[in-house]
Image (tube, rainbow, N blue to C red; front, side, top):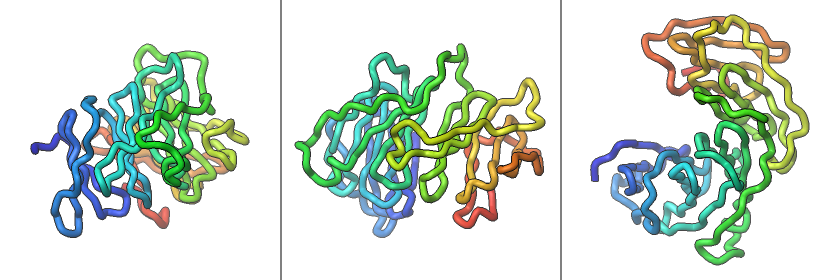
Amino acid sequence: MGAEDVIFSPDGRQLLLVNGTRLAVVSAETWEPVKQPAGGKPVFSMFAFQQKGALLATTDGHEVLVWNTINGRLTARLQCPAHSLSVVTLLFHPDDHHLVAGDGKQFWGWDLNAIKSGLVSSPPILASTSPFLQWPDMPEVLLAFSMGFTEDGSIALVTRQKRAWLVNLNSDPIQKPLHSREITLEGLGEEDWLCSCALSPKADWMAVAANHNLRIYKLNPDSFEKEIRLTETGDAVAFSVNGRWCV
């Protein structure tokens, strides 16, 4: 099959090939295909791998499907909250037990422990939690909406349009957070928007791709540190595992 998207799993052991309604998983150790996920015909728009497990989450923007990449089976169908908009962000929490999604106005999640333990029939239909973060308005044009986590999953970086927050998560990360504060982003111009953002593993630095500039902020207290001109708009920003490098 041809591929519109090619995505490595976090452990680098599998390669996901996506072409519209078709998914294929290839072993990066043998370069042989594993059993192809089957069981639905949506046009996939977003994907998320477990950090250490075998689950792959996909969405067409309205429903989230969870697959087992070892046997290719559809493991669960996840319902979004009533009156939610199209899913624009999808990711696993670092504990690999929870999956988080957002639509530009709210974030919600699912507890996947029942799937992992095999206590439910397959494929079950799981309802989402109530939103654990939400805003009263929805922008006419959504330019940025994302979430990222520290390595231990206790703190989240949330971005929306030209604003960002550090969120101290509950022990159950998809319940109402313990505390949140807005990050002071100095130096953003009227025409700047947050194309992508990343939080360092220890939550002491934040990297922001704003149009054609990479901006680095030190956190707690917040201060602008450096700006690097990019030749292209930064679609993805990430820190190295030790937090010493940003790409």
